[in-house]
Length: 346
Image 1 (cartoon, one colour):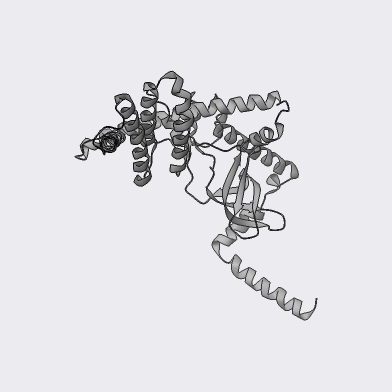
Image 2: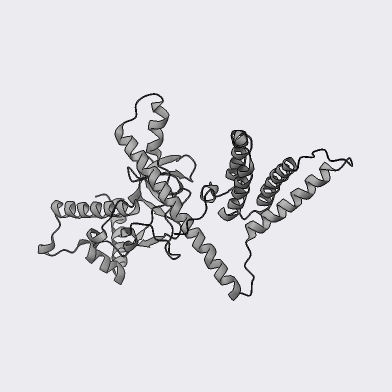
């Protein structure tokens, strides 16, 4: 060994001795490398540990996807199960290949079929990659759910349990876009139908939670010295009164009523009220499904008074466009999906 290499080795050895003088470093070395003869590692031992780890990961995935009816087989798991990450979550992920290391990014898609996340990394040049779920760590406080809750047939609607979140499933998109007139496999049809049914149940569960939250707020209001008010209904009433005044003023601007049929003026007033409600929602900023529901109720009331021969015209020229506006107003997705029907009070 040449003199420079020898000096470098001595310098490294001196630093290592200083490190090992630290109690924690000394213990770490013991835990890492000291094994008795009976505990000697082997390839079989590591293979068994890897297999057990894979099984536990798969059990957690099944629980997260609610594909388990009996939780008695999951007693080896913790009492609290982490909920799957959702689109938009800030994460740190392990990237392999040319850029090997840990990098921060954001989840763009969730693939439950292959247990992966589609992550767009923050660093320029890294792009978007598919990462296994066991190599992705959330940078935000993670949410959990009691393992006992997964065994219930219906999703729990208690306030302290976070409602299950909706995930985007990329594998369903490919067959749809590529099939066109080609026959779709039975397996794909089965998976698609299962997801649609799960979405329907999810919407019902979310409606229950939203309704109970509203009831809870009404119960708290008197304790705080406040008078609970049905704000969406109040807003709708104000808009209807303002719309009637606008139509009345416009109709009699020349001294003679331009439209004499009361049914027509009432329809014009109601449609004007819809526009005023949309304006109030846009200016309010803090949108929620109950406010959207007041808009949907107004549409349904108008629809119920229209002749059956005009229903199609109303749907094509009013209802569809209002639905698009609702979607555009919402900054958190299509909240009007939960406002389209009356809240499930079962």
